[in-house]
Image (cartoon, rainbow, N blue to C red):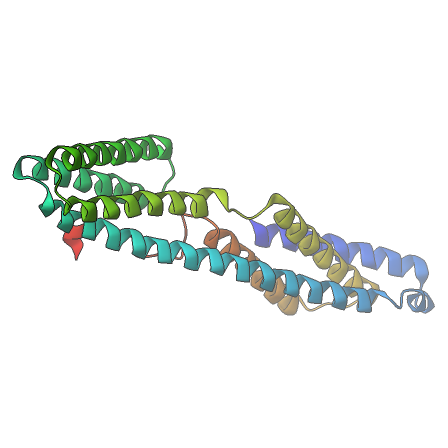
Length: 242
């Protein structure tokens, strides 16, 4: 869709340039000495904005990847330290941990945010159940070994909160998207107008530029999305996968 849209924009710009050229006449082109310079400047600014946006997107991607690894390791450690619980409570805790990571993995496997609120609510409920169970056992038994289990469970809760913050809260600001698409539109229009003013264009070069810009923009959008991305991350959280 972006390629088609930019192709239409550059064609409209080219026709506008031809119209302006026809009104000005052959000598009238000297009245437009800035078009080429402005077009070059806009394309350079567009390249800078794409590079800046891509850097932000890859940084967020790296943060999510690091948190996924941290979440994976914490879940596995919590499963191992569940053996510190009394036999009667151990099976319940492990069952809750397995459900916790299973429902999170299912969201990723279907590559959709549909029902994410229910998943978050259920995960928080499981975290609450595990915490209440561990705190009750610690008070009743006085076993200091349970402090390790509680610390790991606290890490799991904190990591989950950080993952949600990075995935859903720290998104690209709308102002950045608006500026990016505005510059993309203006640069494409000026490229078409500049070609029209001089009465010549290279469809191959224009198409290559449009495709290149579109691919980079789509990649930036994709990297900014937490689940339905083309660039897939390893998200398996099941301790049994180790």
